[in-house]
Structures are given as C-alpha cells and as structure tokens.
Length: 451
Ligand SMILES: NC(=O)C1=CN([C@@H]2O[C@H](COP(=O)(O)OP(=O)(O)OC[C@H]3O[C@@H](n4cnc5c(N)ncnc54)[C@H](O)[C@@H]3O)[C@@H](O)[C@H]2O)C=CC1
Ligand SMILES: O=C(O)CCC(=O)C(=O)O
Image 1 (cartoon, rainbow, N blue to C red):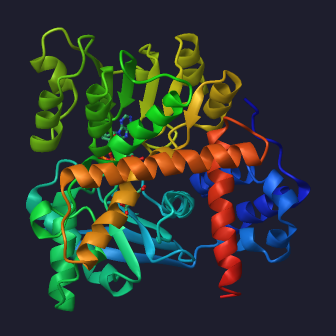
Image 2 (spheres, rainbow, N blue to C red):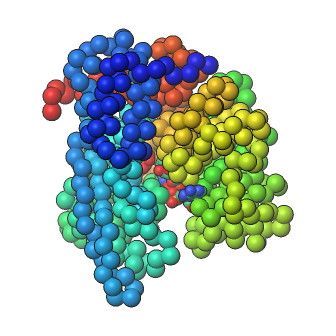
Image 3 (tube, rainbow, N blue to C red):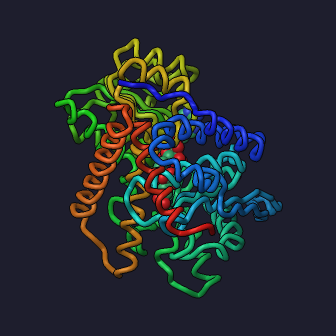
C-alpha cells in the first residue's frame, strides 16, 4: 500500500497561512494537515482549484458563532458556559453536524470537527453541508433539571441561526436524545413552529428516525466489513476491541457481534474492561444508557470480566480495532502494540481518534485503515434520512432504513477505493476519502461563484 506523499510547496504555504490565521487551534491544524497531505495528486490534475483559491475557501469557516450560556444549577447558583456553532461550509446543503457538550470544548475542537464534517458529509453523496457546535458544559453528574436548564439557555441563543434549510444540529459527545429533546422543545417554544427537520437524533415518538441511534456504530462496522469483503474476508470469528462505551461504541459492539465477531473489550474515561467470553450487550446498555454509570460497574456485575483503571485498551490483542471514544485516543505507541499483536483492520468510529504518527504506523504495516470521515459517516447520513422522513411526513421501517444505511456505506467505500486508485494510492482509504470529498466540494464551490 502506498503511503501519503509530502506537501507541495503551494500546499505547505497554505498550511502555514492556516497556522497563522488560527493560532493555538491544534486539533484544527491536525485535521487540515491530514487533508492537505492527500491533495498533491489532485493539485496536479486540477490546477484550476489552486488558481481560484478553493482550498483557502474550504479552510475558512463561513460563520463562527460564540455565545454566553447562563443557567441556574440545583443549588440556585448562576453558572456561565460558552456556546459555539461553526457553520463551516454550505456548498452542498444546509450546515449539518452535531453538538458536543464536554469540558474540553473550545473553538479549535469545534473547528476541527466542522472541517472534518464538511468532507465527511460530501463523501455521503447527500445534500448536506458541514457544521459543528457545542459547549464546555459537562453533563456528567448533573441532574436532569440542570441539563434541561442548560439546553434551554443554549437554544435561546442558538435558535436564530438554525432552520431546516439553514443549519441542522444533532448529537455528539455528551448530547443524546435527552438533550436533543430539551433543545427541540425550546426551539419549538421560541419559534412557535413544529419544525421537525431542524434537529436530528430526535426520539422515535416525536420525529426521530429508526436506526439513527444505531447508525454511526453500525455504519463503522459496515465500512470495516466492506474492506474485509474486498479481500475475501468477514467479521465472522474475529476478535474485536472497541474503545468508548457511548452511543457509537455500543452500536459498533452490537453490529460486530451480529456479524459473528467476539468483542472482548471497551472503555470509558475511567478505564477499560476485558471480557474474554464476549461483551454482554444488555448489561452494557443498562449501565451506560439507562443508569448513566461507569464502565467499572460492568466488571463488578459480570463474572469473569476485569476492569483496568490505569492502562491502555489498545494493549488488548485483537484482529479488528474500532476506536469509538474521542480524538487522539490512539497514539503511536498504541499503534505499534496493536500491530505487534496482529491487528488487521482499524476503522475509526470516533472523529480523528488516531494521531498522525499512529496512522503512519498502520499504513506502513499494511493494516486496513478506515479514517473517521469515511467510517463514521453513517450517523450523519442517517440524519439526512431522518430529514427526508420529516420533510415527507413519513417514517420508514427499521429494515428499510438499515438497508439504506448499508447501501450508503457501500457507496462511500466504493468512492474511497476508486479515488485512491485514480490518484495512484490503491488501498489507501485516507487518500481516497480526502481526494473524493475534496473534488466534489471543489466543483460545487467553483460552480457557485465567489460568494
Ligand atoms: N454520535 C454520533 O452520531 C457520532 C459521533 N461521532 C464521534 O464518535 C465519538 C464518540 O461519540 P458518542 O459515542 O456520540 O459520544 P458519547 O458521549 O455517547 O460517548 C463517548 C464515550 O467516549 C468515552 N470517552 C471520552 N473520553 C475518553 C477517553 N479519553 N478515553 C476513553 N473513553 C473516553 C466516554 O466515557 C463515552 O463512553 C466522538 O469522537 C464523536 O465525535 C462521529 C460520528 C457521529
Ligand atoms: O448526525 C449529524 O448531523 C452529525 C453527526 C456528527 O456529529 C458527526 O458525524 O460527527
């Protein structure tokens, strides 16, 4: 497999401009560099993109909104958080992308996520632009009333920027259907409009889509399965490790188990568990989805399972690794360990979970590597299906929606593989994903003129 080429002098110059214009935003720099490293062959084939400054336009968000979020906690005290929405690019459709509530959130994280989202959404082939938002609010340990108060205050500012044809948020870390419910309720109250298509990830009784909850995790496994099938293999009988135990991780575990794999480990920010007999999904869902508990409780309740507090989940040997927690959770040392232990496939359910050095280790070892913008695109794609159902006042069956998701993931896999071939790097899904989405975006940006 060919690894990614060096930057051309022009791309290097542009990257330095990005560094200067966005100081201190390390995750954004990382996401931009990862795309630039794939673009040398496109730059040669399409000189018109450089002449018309397409890349400069794609690196500058169309709009960045930062706002104060005041709310009252259960002790009657006022708390102030910071809210963000970065409307990155709308060449292909309304801004679309999740909201993250986590104490680490700052502008650089939201911009990296919005940039990734723009390319990911292009890859789906659906009419959605890219955006992302969130807040440094930490929902962990907060009562339902506090979460509701925060969400209502957040939406009281954000609502003026949203609309089904303008900007359509969804969930991400710390934002699930409970938070989407409070956000949707406040939007409806302020606008006096039952505008179902303004948010996705809604509950099934009030405009949500079947399979949206499962879509990101299922889609990641579908993508990995496509990579395996292209080499005459499958998930059946494979040993799998999944990091995280949130929305993406749980449904990656579920689909991997349905396809005949044994998932032996998962984690949260407190540590990881190992269960050699295969994860008990009902127990995992009860602890994480119902009780909002810690992963250590799994080992307390399941005979034969163990909990490791201060370790690295990637020390657990596996055939397939699915990082589904957060950015830069899998570093070079972890990648070296995984390769030494015989990993064959890595598919990113999270956004940018592998560091650049880890990614190089995988490519050099000929591991089948699926970057997040391809592998985890099933979530946003199913959000677009939710918008379609809302627009037509319809709701589709589980079977039909899952079939659509599987078809979309097959299409993304084909586009990535074909683009990697076209640009001289067969088997390199990073280059395939970046070149395919970039060309699609660039053509739309050019067609729309200088706006
Ligand atoms: N929810 C969605 O539809 C999509 C999510 N993603 C990405 O997937 C990742 C996970 O998101 P969700 O599952 O939605 O969030 P979530 O809030 O449901 O779960 C996040 C999980 O990651 C764990 N975690 C966080 N930091 C960790 C750390 N340092 N080490 C180990 N575990 C850690 C948390 O304990 C939790 O189990 C994020 O990168 C997100 O951007 C990507 C595409 C769509
Ligand atoms: O469903 C969506 O709109 C967004 C999902 C998301 O945030 C992501 O793909 O990272």
